[in-house]
Image 1: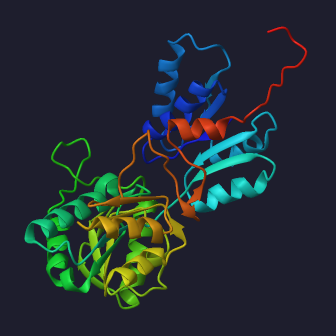
Image 2: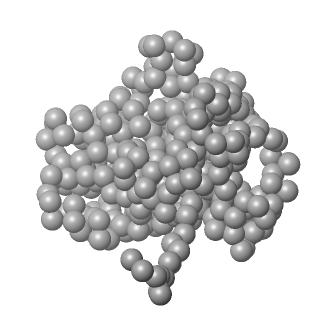
Image 3: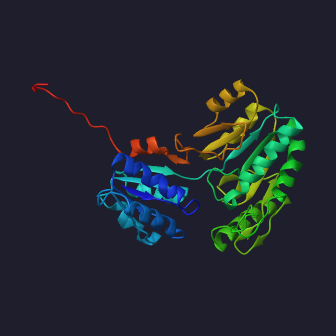
Length: 335
């Protein structure tokens, strides 16, 4: 099989490809992202110290323009890809007879409902939202991109979110005091800058941030974002947060679903029945109650609905994708 990993969690997401393959006995070629090949190679050095049989794994850093031949090689019947929607579906379209699992983008929503109303509740939500809209520079597919707040708490929540975002320390990621480091490249920061500018020019209100310094982009909060601008429709993959007001649970859940993506959502509520309704109503792969959507664990099935991908990660679930059932029928044998 072929595992293709992205740049944003370069060791963790390489391990998510390799570990299930080793556990299932499925030989794997791992292609780390061209921007971050060293973590994959270090993983290969560790594997080389084991007793795994020759040919059970390979680490193959190649530039992206060399990928088509590798993707289309008939000796690799399974492809596990984590990355952008555009690239993932292009891979699937190019090999219609192969089994593809795709972990693609998202624009994760954090919903704050009316019962999450105490000062302590709102402080907790604001700090969690600020942290997980900006961790990894916002370069996580389950980072918080959209905050959907009930009208009854909106006016009290919004200044708390802005203050918590402004408290995020930007700088050198090797400094322990830094909360938000640079994006992967200056091109990435320029893209984020252009999306924010487009939204502001279309009528959005910039409450904080909105400034670029090379590859770094200041943690940003926007409100009044028109529904048709890029930052409202696509995955920003940067430290930018939009906040919108809704009236009631049904409108909040409809706002979450009003997206081509459906990876995960976080619902701030204390009500168990609301939690069950959210799980039924939301078109996402995972619902986190009482917190932001930015959580995964390897024992859980992780993946999305709609254009957030197909298949599930998590060791056991990836093993299922990397293998297939076979039947053995015994007749005429003395047992």
